[in-house]
Amino acid sequence: MTNTDRQPDKIISITAWVLLLLMLIFILKNLAFIFIPFSLSLLICYALGIPIDLLKQYHIPNFLRIFLVICFLSAFGYLLGSLLTANFQEFYRQLPHFEEKFWGYVHEILTWLNISREQVKESYNSFISGLGGNDLKSLGGVARRMSSSFFAFLGNMIWVILFIIFILAEKDEIDGKIIRAFGRAGAEPILAAGQRINRAVQDYLGLKTLISLATGIMVALALYLFGTPFALLWGVLAFCLNFIPNIGSLIAVVPPVAITLFQYGSLPRTLAVCATLVVIQTVIGNLVEPKVMGKGLNLSPIAVLFALLFWGWMWGIPGMLLSVPLTAAIKIAFEQIEATRPFAMLIAGK
Image (tube, rainbow, N blue to C red):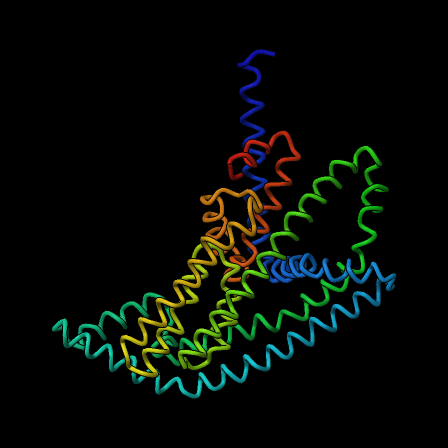
């Protein structure tokens, strides 16, 4: 076959892959209400794999291991949710005070810059109308929208728990089913890729969780010593946002610094809190985490950034949390297929 004959075949192949990719994106985007809980449950199952495997060493039946781990997870979530709810309710109660302080600082800045409040108000209303969010005209509106989104997300947790139960129940049966479906020879590459994905994601999640937990504890302790209100809330926020690569740790610094300024009105104290949080995030993110995680999932920084943007566009905040593990799993899967191996090499690290 000549090169001229092969050219149409390449075009057809590329077109087919592009159409398949677009169709997959369309499905994932429009069925997000199913895929987000399912992906989160997979991620949690990876994290729970370590305690379940430890319990297996004591010859505890599979259903009892799942029951014990789910009970522990539910109890921990209930206690943490109760603490966070109490903190959030108190924060919402004090929000008018913080809002008044905020506009006071805005007025001082405007006076210093010789800008009228009418000009700022006009620009602000234009910006808000552009977003199409009339409910955002106050900090209280922002908080209400955030809280409603948060509790809507919590409402989906029932699906996550159901997925976790069924996935864990099938965990020990999957390998046998794949062998029966594809035969021993056909199942070997699938099982090998699955084991690599399991090992890579589980190692990443285990180390990332420990590092994020250390970050959250240090942030909460530092804020408590500075007397910043809601130190536990900001510590949990730092823990959660640490799973979002690149920008999560930066976002986690803003709320406690702003609250410190609103509460005390002291610029030196606020700068001290800001410097402390930046040092914690910088040391852990740039020194501790690279040494502990080593090569990690072997993804290039630019691939991590684009994955963050893509999955954030697809699924919002849950997509940002899932961006790195999902991209690593896709890379490992691409490495098993000859046609997609070049794409795996493009998103791989050194």
